[in-house]
Image: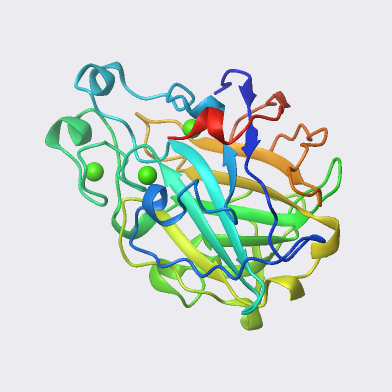
Length: 279
Ligand SMILES: [Ca+2]
Ligand SMILES: [Ca+2]
Ligand SMILES: [Ca+2]
């Protein structure tokens, strides 16, 4: 399905430890709630906002909307915080609802009879061809991820972490979510065990293939399944984060076609102050 033009905005921004500014030693304590754990008042937090923070970019059955439900693939934003001392990247995939709760009944892994009777499919543990994946790579126009972290939609690529969580070398040319290559054993972090959001760590982040922190990074994201019928997928196209201090000025972003069935997504970015966009 083709979704509307989106804007990705980046807020905040000291890229702690990656730029020529004092490093913030910042260890995030996970509780499952990205809004709480990666508070925007935390100067180390980088936020990539999806679709202006609006909910309309993941299709779902009208009756779900009429019932006030929001599917569990709809990403609100990504939040990143890098701890230089431990060389750990803390990653928060922030969802409007509950990550993986496809039918929006507030429980990931189970769905209502109405959802099932209408042909919907929601599997526990981000199972089957479901995936929540975040890609990382160089700060490069027309770039693509060199690393992927999360739960692959191809379970033959599953890692050894919770629900098959893995940090892996990205397979070039494959859609994010199905592109988990060789596991990066020195970089395996931990997926937090409860939601509503999707939080994990990547160890030894500066040593990831294709990553040179001094040059900034690129990031993209995918959440969805091709099999759930009643609900679309969400994605954030490859977005570059430069080494600018103290405010990161977004650079021209790439237009990529990498989600299941999405032809192309226009993307542009603009700067916005943190104060204007607290949530
Ligand atoms: Ca979204
Ligand atoms: Ca959330
Ligand atoms: Ca559910």
